[in-house]
Image 1: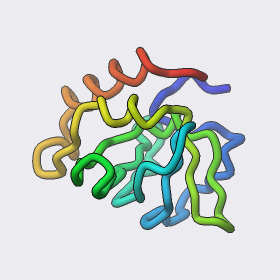
Image 2: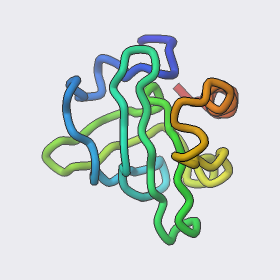
Image 3: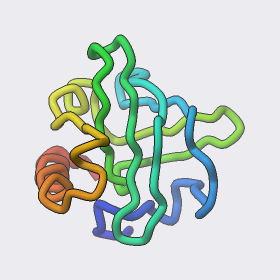
Image 4: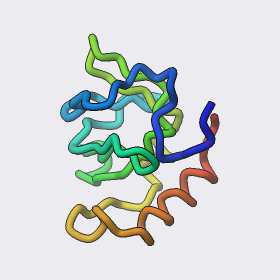
Length: 117
């Protein structure tokens, strides 16, 4: 298993170039939203999840290393986090954070503290 928080694990069922926009995202305790955008760049892969009304329209950035499984047939992505862990994560603002190294560091620190894998 890779130690990188920012890379998909080889066993998750993700193939580079796969369009994940619109896939439902499932936490360990239920659905949290849909993928709004994503990156599959090596060492900086992530999902931006629109949590919709669940937490008042908050967008969150999830490092790809937290993805347990990508189910292409069901268009679902399973992550190794609880809803509360995601709810409490730093909010993603595409106008401020898309290429912000400090923000990515903050996200990395937050999820390393909450990583279960």
